[in-house]
Amino acid sequence: MTGPPEPRIGKEFYDAGDYFDAGTEHLTSVDSPFQRYRVRKVMELYEPGPRERVVDIGCGWGTFSFVLAERAAEVVGVDFSERSIAICQRRLAEEPRSNLRFVCADGGHTGLEAGAWDLVLAADLFEHLYPDDSARVAAEANRLLRPGGRFAVWTPHRGHILEILKNHDIILRRDVSHVDYKSMARMRDLMRDAGFDIDRAYYAASHVPGLRIAERLLQGFVPFLRRRVAVLGRKPGG
Image 1: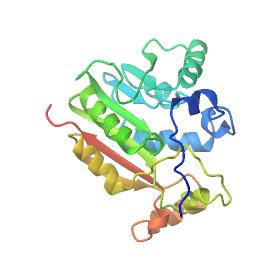
Image 2: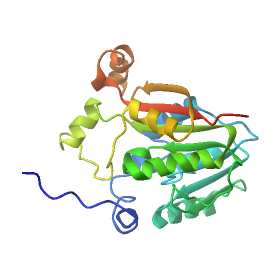
Image 3: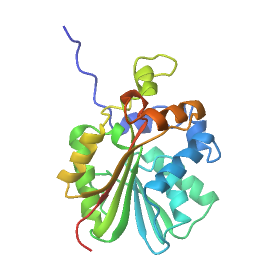
Image 4: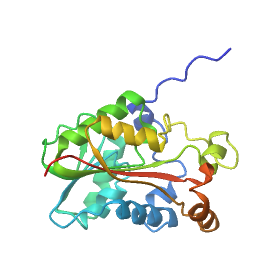
């Protein structure tokens, strides 16, 4: 017999719990190897130009919002967690950016202007979304973008050896907020169903030096060496 289903993780998990506090130095420090890797790889997927307007959905600690503000004309970071937005607002007060603002809103219903944005970014977001929410966020990304605008997605691959170990509490601790990992095929289908054409879709290697070499050489043949799912969608037209 299977036990009762786990309670659905929602906004209160991020606002009332220790998600934004516990063991997050590698996430909050812009100089950590993990963050440098993350920024570099996501910008390889798509880097906006100086006239482009960007929405960063699931902005978390604001990492990509601040990075994008150095590159784009306007950036809006969106997160449904009040705690996330408070963290981002504090950093913005310390490091002002005239072209950056943060909004506390559901990623599936941001309230932002439709058809006005050049890039929507969802970096390390979709693993935190249940299937119904995933569909809503993808649809919202399409609504926000102008024709020809891009939707960039970066999310962990569940079948990678590190995720397998983590989800069995071996070496690393399971992240209970990762409620629904997406495979490459599923992520592509999600985006197509929301009306996107797929411009690029590939597996990205990890930041761990020795493992990274093995991943680059063998990930085409060995599924457990496929670290990150990277997909770039484009809204038709434009």
